[in-house]
Length: 360
Image 1 (cartoon, one colour):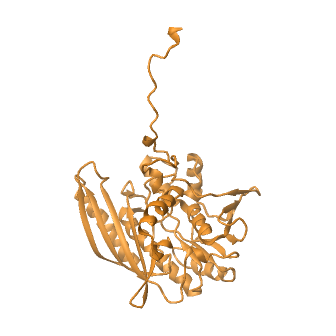
Image 2 (spheres, rainbow, N blue to C red):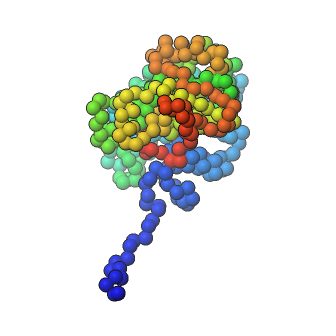
Image 3 (cartoon, helix red, strand yellow):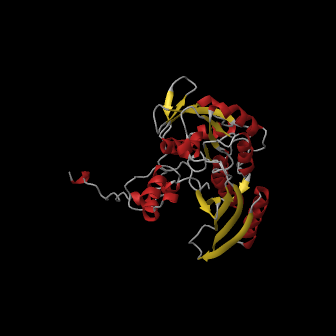
């Protein structure tokens, strides 16, 4: 019987070392999933940050804050960018640091005007890399029609960073008569996406992991304020705009459904997914609805305005692939469902963590 006794003890399982994108929800430490834009992110914001800072402006929890100052309606947003690698097909950390914040402002209907830029640099990073990121930011700012007006720089010891991190904050003016927020979604609203989804997440993942899918997949990173202006020129009564970044289209639609107390019904075959993205997601076991985008928006538009808004979007360079993908419904409030190509339905829930870490 002695021969049956184990000769070595199994090491204890330590969940804090797990890097699964869907970690345990009762862990007392920060895990990667807290940055994924899903349920863990929402819980972190609600239970820690909103609880600490709670105020009526913050409680709206939109892509940006809407403020009144000196008689003007301002949009104000801030975001940090920690993408790895710093450069990828179709863009770079510099592009994201501008376009991401510009687009957050645009989702309120604002015309972005000024940005700040704060750099955290790791000791040992090549100055040519920093210069390349800064120049990309400058070019992206010019393309977006905004000015980088102020900034800051910090350096951390080698091993305490990841090359370059950038935080940008931005302000813009919201036109009078425009009221765009997730709480305004109404049953009957048409749900429109501005173009093919999933490109950014797959582009970053392909170069990070050294994957090849037969064709190069480029990020869709782009500023969207001009596209939003073209939509508002058709009707100022756009109910909701969101740019589906972390957590993809699924996360954005779930957030809108829950904020408005409505349901969302999508038609799977109507959602524009490029063949290369579909193939990559199929190979990796991912759902394109959860993959991040950086140059797309989703809009909830009154049904009587849907065709006119679609026409205006398709006439714009950033909306050429716009598609009507579903509608807002009174059924199943707070829930997103998809009508599959086989005639069934499935629930598209808010992701717990993230499928692809560090993509924005």
